Image (cartoon, rainbow over all chains, first blue to last red; front, side, top):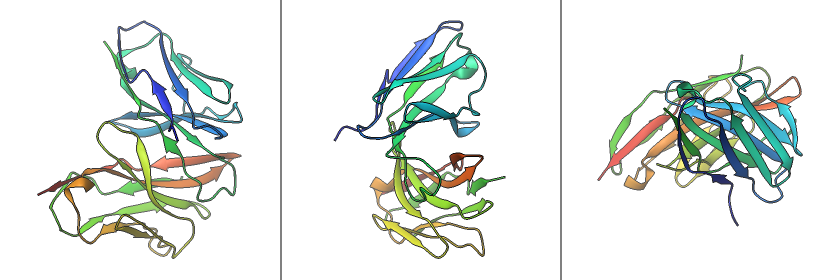
Amino acid sequence: DAGVIQSPRHEVTEMGQEVTLRCKPISGHNSLFWYRQTMMRGLELLIYFNNNVPIDDSGMPEDRFSAKMPNASFSTLKIQPSEPRDSAVYFCASSPTWAPNGGGETQYFGPGTRLLVL
Amino acid sequence: GNSVTQMEGPVTLSEEAFLTINCTYTATGYPSLFWYVQYPGEGLQLLLKATKADDKGSNKGFEATYRKETTSFHLEKGSVQVSDSAVYFCALRYSQGGSEKLVFGKGTKLTVNP
């Protein structure tokens, strides 16, 4: 079975440019997550969706970040305009379900997109 | 709030040595606890989990026991291999305001030398 697919794997851009990261979750999974990983702050949840609906976006840094999930098999994370401090590895993850009393259900991570903003 | 603290690395061991990576947590209610592993250039993979007090999670020779009295979930392996070299993350799952959250520790890098 294919795991979570992310593209691109690497992105180098200049400050002020728009960046779009893409994710295809595991087929049949109803929950999708976007994380950011940096040396300073570790792994942080940005936003997650259940059944294509955003549930918690409290981790989105600011208005420059936006995420969409137009259907069950695709999501995007957009940064506009990008800044050097956005440089990080961005992970997408999916889960069969992510709801209260889900207890031990886990998340399945993609390989990440390494973003460098110059 | 809910958080996880794990020992800072890096940790360097020789093959067949005993491994312990400490993890303690702060949480309200009854969280589920996880260990994830991240190999170079890859995403995180679930290593093991425990959903209630005194549960022991195990996988690939790794073990961790959910200790409510000490709020700990330490990762152990009796004999490490070079292939265990990776970054290990302790994580906690909890509910807050209708949202389910998974919060991670900072990670501990393990290097195993032949």
